[in-house]
Image (cartoon, rainbow, N blue to C red; front, side, top):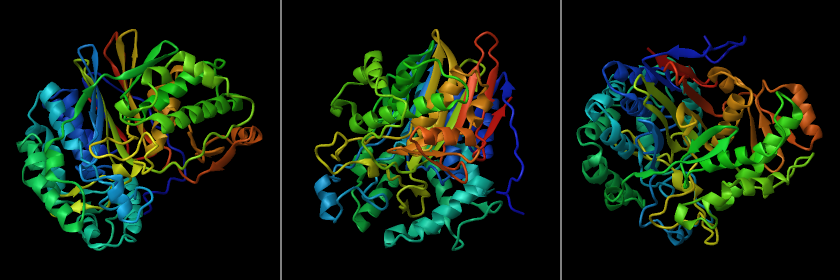
Length: 533
């Protein structure tokens, strides 16, 4: 039986509930969060439980050794958490170049930065949680210890990652195979996989509120491995790390406030694109002119984002100026009848999980977590289940670039949670994971929702496009052919891809401010599920 064969189209409906809701890319993880809500936890507890469970239930996209960001709505106020980690103190551009690289490598020890995810769980629990971290992480611990059967899309990408990682050379990669390919191959769809080391690590994080990961035996295990294999991360880097509460940034788009995490995240790319497209005529449904204008707006926003986004203090131009309507108006004037070609650059692919939660008290969380490229760097700390991220791959080794590698610096970050409000009231959390697809996914979900009044599920189901550089545009196989032809006549180089795997995976929860009723949509491009009660 082929679990990836779907010869006939299927249709999902929007899910409605009153007491609570969790939407994410893996059914068991969504149910883990729902179980915490049913035990008396709030939306924040549910988000932490779901995030921890996803490190077990979808390790192809995230892990304990990754980063996280969150937007948290509590008592009428939106809070932002930046839990991305900086580069190690020993990691300098000179040190990387001395190893023979002229740009940051994607795999191995060099692109590893300080993981922020465990600290994010502990900080969210401390500030807003109702249950203990031990209780909240228990579902993830149980799945790691007892095992679970692989879901279809998870199995597909696990196999793909295994085939890619087989090409890696060096003893430092051996523990990835011990952990994630214990039978000498990738586990198959429906096959049980477990990781006792992963369970033990989660249990230790739960008992110590993550401090052991940064200061104790787990931190020491990470340092010992790095020293043995010539890596840069040290226990002192971990011990000095703390996630940062930040003020979210926003723009008003046709009466709605769209919120993102400020740089070093790329969320402002979505806001810049919305500002630019708002300067154009009111969009018409499924027309080539509308898609052309949207694509051109995204090109301009992304070109500027790539040029300027890094740590806030090192950006050569202010966030306020980039998000101003005056700036958007200037950029919008560059959109003509034909496709333009901005400064070209290559867009790498990414691996990320996104989740949204809500409870009956009005609390809501938009949360995203990632190891960056799939499983990450290919480095797993022996016996722990900790797969280390490769977030440092985005640093530049050109000292004239704003994102130039420096010790203790956070790189340009692709993962972004989104949130929507109107007139000071929460509409709800939304997100679309997937590397550099993320702001493009945010942009398309927001315009689908606000401009065309699509329900949460329909807003996610609309066939997507993705700018990949120059005049090159990828579209999904379901993207209408008449639009493909019309966009080609406007100078766009359109490629129809065979599946939707590279177009992001989204989740949405909207809340009716009068009734409190929750409406959720989940991603048809993955194993997504909305769990509710």
